[in-house]
Structures are given as C-alpha cells and as structure tokens.
Image (cartoon, rainbow over all chains, first blue to last red; front, top):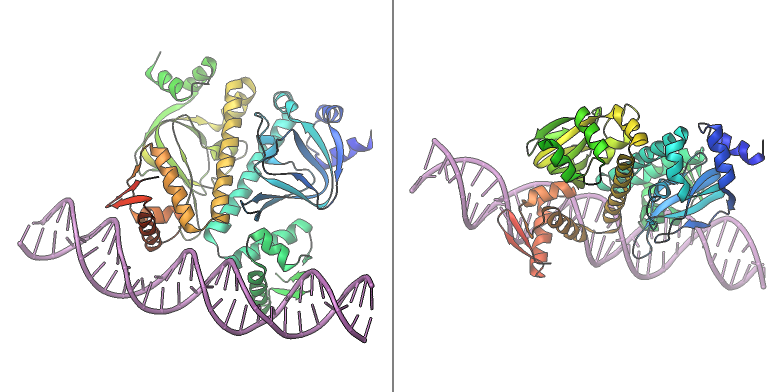
Length: 211
Length: 211
DNA sequence: CAGCCACAGTAACATTTGTCACACGGACAA
DNA sequence: TTGTCCGTGTGACAAATGTTACTGTGGCTG
C-alpha cells in the first residue's frame, strides 16, 4: 500500500477501498505552505480539495478587502463550496488561505457526479459535508446577527482553541480584528475587559484562555 | 393527468415523468395558511416540502425570540435544510413561516436517498438547491458582516420587491425591524432618510420603491 | 360621535463600535 | 548602545444604533 493510500485512509476512514483506489488513480497530491491562498473569490473552481494534513481557513471577502472568517478546514474534510460548485462552471464565492502547511489531494470536478452515483461512501461524505457546513454557517449568522462584539470575540477564541486543540492562542490583536471585521483597538479593549473578568491572561502575541 | 400532476409539472418542469409519478405515489398534498409556522427550530424533520404555490420565509431565531430573515421559498423550490437533514434524525435549525397561502407536497425523508440514486432529475434538483441556498446565505453574511443598517435596509427592500414582483411593499416598519433584527425607530429613521434622498415614497403600511 | 388601536414621526439620551492620536516596552538589527 | 518596528494600552472623540418617551393621525368599532 502506497504512503498516499495510507494517509487518505487515515484522514477519510469511511471511504471504501474502491473509492480510495479511484481517488488515487485520478487525483494529484499537492502541498501548500502556510499563508498560501488556495482559492480566491471570483476564481473558477476546477478541483475539489480533500485535506490530508494541516489547516485551512475559509473566509468571505468584502468589497474593500475586508475579511470575514467563516470556518476552518481540517484533515478529513473538504471544501463544501467546491463540492457545491461542481455541476456548473462556477466561480468561487470565498477565499481559502492556508493556516498550517497543508497536504491535500485535488480531484477534477468532472468525477464528482460519477462518484456520487457509484460510490455510496462518497455520496455520504458529500451530503455530510453539506450539512455540517451549512450548520456552521448558520451559527456564524447567529453570531453576527444576534450577538455583540464581546460575545463574538469570546466565541471566536473558543472556536480557535478548539481548532488548534490548546488553550494558548498565538495571534495578534490585529489578526483577530481582521477575522471579525473590526479594529484592533476594539479587540484590545474587549480583551482587557475579559482579562479583568478573569477569562483570559494576555501576553505578547498570545492569549491564554482560562475558560 | 390529475390536477396535482399538472401543478407539480408546472412548478418543477425539470422533473422527469418517472419522478413525478413516484412523488405522487408517495407524497401527500397539503395546504397552509398565511401566518402558519410549518417548521420550528428544534423540531424533528420528517419530511421534505416542495412548494407548488404561495410563499414561505425561512428565518433563524435568536435565544430571546429575535428573528432574522434568511430567504424566501417560492414555487419550484424546496427547503435546503430539510434536504440536508435527510440522512440523520436531525432537528431543524430554522423556522419556516407562511407568507402567502401555500400549496405543497410533503415527501418522507426516507425516499430522498433512494431517489438521489435512481432519479437524475431529483439529484440535479437537490444539488442545485444546495448550491443556490448556500450562495444566498453567503450573501446574507456579507450584508450583516460588511454593511451598515442603511444598506441592509435597501437590500432588504429590493429583495422583497423582487420576491413579490412589484414596487409596493406592504409591510409595517415594525415587521421590517423584526426581520432585520433592529428596532422600529431605526427603520423609521432610515426610511425617512431614504425618502429625502428620493429613493422611496412612504405611505401607511406601504413603501413605494422608486429605485 | 367617542374611544381605541395600530402605525408612524421624532426628540433626547445611552451604549456600542469605529477612528485618531499618542505613549510604552520588548525584540532585533545596525 | 541606539534606533526602529511591532504589538499593545488608552484616552478622546465621532458615528451608528438601541432605548425611552411622547405626539399625531387614520381607521375601525361600539
């Protein structure tokens, strides 16, 4: 068994052996460096990307270059948007940026439809991806529609901690401000209040979560 | 050809004859009155609903009963959420309320998977629904993330006019405020400004769009 | 007609968020 | 060491939005 097969199996344990063979025969293995932008708003989507290793963030871009974080992609996941856009020659509505170096396989969109019909495990994966991403996006809407910045910041920090699996968040206030589409000063202000409430400890380039 | 067959054919022209026969054999025809709540946050989803006539609005509910409009459903459409939740015994994340009296067919979720495999036109419909709803939700995120209330109000009015196909919007300021999750006074204020800019004419219970 | 009610307008004020200006300290390089 | 960034903290102010309170008006009903 090739090294690649093993890592696909590991990241996507529910895929059938048939499917994994097909993936290997038709996909290309790629790596991306932290900071790379894999997909950009307005670009045509030609491939679906399955993440084997690393981490991506998916965000929406405003007209004046503002960012707005939607969610993270991790090993065993795929970009719902790229799955959705498959049928038509669609342009991407979002931007994907590498957070941690990524290993991935890219699959030509043309195969999507075929696999949906022929591979039960692929079908289930796609439906599952749709569902979970849709739910995630609904949660994002809740946050910006119903909650003020202080709650959103708290939510953001918790989500980040969960994604990286630790309580130390190594981000500058500026970076956080970008992802929440607010300003650094506001983030500093709110973090200071959180520190006073005993929810975090603040260090240079690091926020220690106490929740 | 039964009356029902005709209206399904009309609302869903891309469905194959086979599929329509299956729908008729397995679905139940239902009507709902304006104001009815068809689906509510937290409820289990047992059916998919295909709209034949009328109009629904889908919104998200906040913890304190706030509403937040996501999109409208019209004839020829189905609730993406109900399609998505199909596989698992999922509870609804949204609420659906009837705007104009609705005629619809409801389909047991159990058939979804089967049809996905056996009916190409159903498969395409589902994928198309996913895609368009996802895009719509992304647009909603743009609005609340990047735009101030005045722009959101403008967008809301335009969308509403489009949905009802006319330039006269028969809504009170209070109703609009609910859907945008703001207060009536704010809506009044902004509408007044829009009137001064010559974008609308204001009447009792009616807003006339001049854009 | 009188009374009631929903809708709309508006002033005054509180709160939240965004913006500008500037100060401080650590890290690092010349 | 000195100077230069970068990240952070903070005060002062502006703008947008939420809140409270009150007014007027039209339509409906008893």
